[in-house]
Image (cartoon, rainbow, N blue to C red; front, side, top):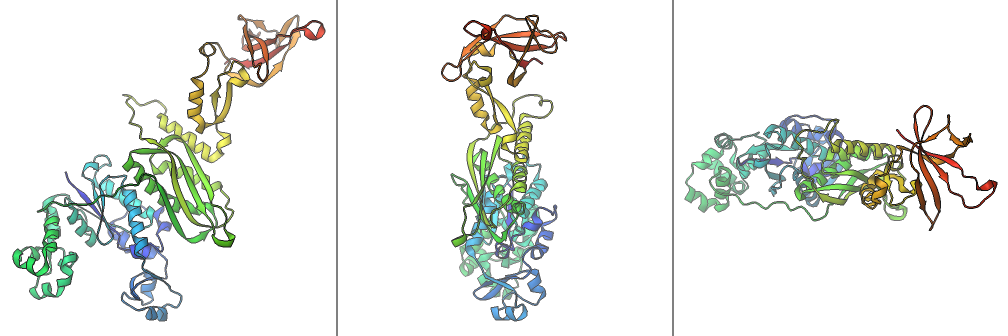
Length: 513
């Protein structure tokens, strides 16, 4: 089934200067109308956007003070002397639309930019994956709040129909007959090619699209041009639609300019989520997973400039989901002390690999999947620090002290590579589950090593002679049994020479479980 989502950003000229980050993480669902209604309450209370020296967008507080669309700068300052007046920035609006489009790529690879701050998403093939149209629209709406923008969402079987419904905030029309009924009730002025002829249509008494449909097509084309008929036919599904899809870049790097100097790292989380959502869409579009990300916190420029603060997050398992990345960033930012206020943040995806296919096992693993365990380890690393969460790293060496080291978990690939180089005869020999950090010298009683009780040798010796290039070891290792039947790994030093100093010494090196 072909189905489109139309995503219209009615407050974009205003919200590019004051995003709605404060409410993006605290608000729940809500209808499109509710989002549009409280848009001005979430932005800077005194902001006014001018275009050609006239007001084209304003916040709710400015409207309460009497500022109206079309008013000149002087009138605004007379009513609100402390108003924040800015010029409309088409460049910022284009960047914001591109950021939203990048985030929407996580739901479909077919995302297109349309006129008047609107995006079109072909989501017909994505409905089952995301649980149906209602859940998909809720996810899109939640992402918009996180990005800091107000959105009107509509669905329709045609792209232009979804565009028109979104511009009017007219809800969802999943089937074609429902779309036709909704389109018939829309005003003619919604069609951009019809706006220059608004007075002519009023004179004819043609105000709605169903009335426009009944006008003679040859005369309508001569009067208004072919573009009006093409847009009308595309909306009603009478002609094919050609769109240009968003192409994700080869490498992901996104930057966000902050609108205030932030002095606490945990306040940067909402802005970081804005960037992570873009990266999530980029990863899904490129069928990639990220293993390492770098968040750069930019400080003041000029004479008091200092290098950006780098926050690097290494993952034990690659991912492409924003929830897990945000948990790790929240832990890292909560412990970070800033050297200077932050004025901008930048996110880079540094280490990538192809998305892993889903597991092919018939039954799930008990206690959670491998991905769940890796996420727990990554959360521990973010909370406790890289140096406090370690894993065993085998080395190709016969000496027990050298054969294993403890390294941070993000060196997992290196550990696997080195383990493959271990001599096969060493891997087949018995080894204790607990190796002492430093061998413990044992007492001798009745010519037998003593550790709590006399130890009885219970195995043949394993001779280790290695390390002549750095630290020579000449030892005979045994498995010994105590009076309590506990098993110990002990060794006897082989000493060349004679006399009292030449007596062999015994050491405890490990304990068997």
